[in-house]
Amino acid sequence: MSNYLMELAALMAIFSFAIVSPGADLAMVMRQSLVHGRRAAIFTSFGVGTSLMFHVTYTILGLGLIISKSILLFNIVKWLGVAYLLYIGVQSLRAGKMSLAVAEGPADKAQSALKAFGLGFAANALNPKPVFFFLSIFSTVVSVETPTAVKFGYGLVMASCLIAWFVGVSFFLTTPKMRAAFERAGQWIDRTSGLVFIALGLKLAVQRAN
Image 1 (cartoon, rainbow, N blue to C red):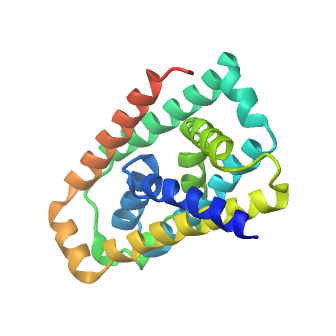
Image 2: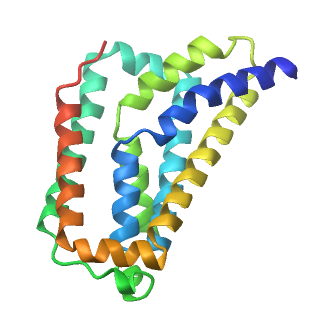
């Protein structure tokens, strides 16, 4: 049991840096918070966390190794991710003036829970970086003798921490003071997030399988 706790502690020490680092997931949750409100952002956060379990699952089952060794499969995942990031980036740039004052009223109703969840899931699932991230840390930190059930337990802990982090971001960005401050920024919120998504998509486009 102590060996498993040490493995989990080592995993979380590495994963904690990945949680807070800027990326497509954070950009998505921030935009959801500011444009569609707290409820939508929370569902998006759960989508991101659920997608993380998707990555953990195929890594544990060995599919991560297959994708990392297959240029074709890597490129399929990569270009799907590029297309998705560019699409939401362009949509953000084309969006009109936002009204955050009603973020938990009519704006929430404009986006269903399923769509909000799906946005978070897709933002994470269509990113090939987790393939290499989880493959590398599980190969390095987790013993091959660790039972599969325990490995899935590690994944659940990481997914829970990721969800908690983004839910915290969602609450912080939807407090009255923060909402008022961002509302004054108007369309620049959408324009900035749109440029971020496009930049992430272009960065992903030039990434190569190692």
